[in-house]
Length: 401
Image 1 (cartoon, rainbow, N blue to C red):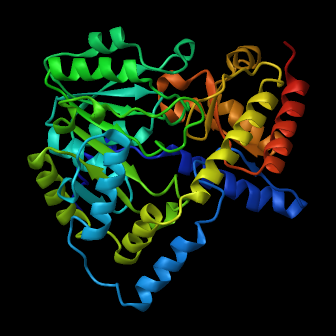
Image 2 (image 1 turned 90 degrees about the vertical axis):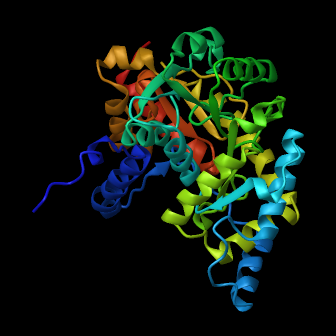
């Protein structure tokens, strides 16, 4: 039998899913027979149910037989709604012709990198950051150039370090704000400085703005809002996080660069043909229907953030700042790691097995996450209190400051 492609080993994965699979097995085989359970404080999925008006729109679409192929770019009504919403958030006069709808937001990462990167080309990627950026880049033969997001800068990138990373082989900068896994929000000045660098060096930007409506302090500023950037930027977004629609798998890419959009469409045609028809009508309702539940969810996330930040900072050896967006908390555990002479992955494994709480090691998101663990505050206040209490009890028993 012939060997597999040499590209396959270069393709990474979203290790958070691997951790969850391991945890589920541990819970099923070890804890449940003893009448115990895990508390999940790691997941990047809203705990809220999808708003009922959105689910009803899906049912209506099925009843009306909206169950066939759609154009690869997506149904015109949804593309127009996406353009209108993106126009409102950026000030750029986007039209439906600037929009591609996809099966979730991940394809936009794959298509954009595929459209731009030849073997040896460099992509500057925030680290710690969403692991799929680097996975896709390396799979396609590109070189990942990690840009450290430092805790002392509230996990915002350093513009001088960004400039130093650029070479003649640099083709693309990936931005993610509000950021996963740190919750950092890049302010307008920083975004404008990045735009200057992109223009000066003729670089593309892939701006992952999937958390742009989950802001706890300040406001989101899109790099597409900077004059001239709309034609060298692909905006990535979707309904999963904002509308608690992770299973619907609807995302999109927006750009004023016609050649780029045509390339993205060609890649999508070869990959998915089109996004799920019923889910597109659900997304249309999400964008054009009542936004009351979105406001309510963000307000609740803010309360849960404040609760989690307070409780985590009471654990010996753990410290964190209060994130400005998304629903993640990056916690410094360097003192604990040094005291116990273990790494972040081993710490999280011990917390799972001994405290029965699941959190993620920072290394899931890159090498610069080594001294950190990531919490998510999508869980209920009850689970947050119980989970942190369990961790505090365990850490106190094995660690003395």
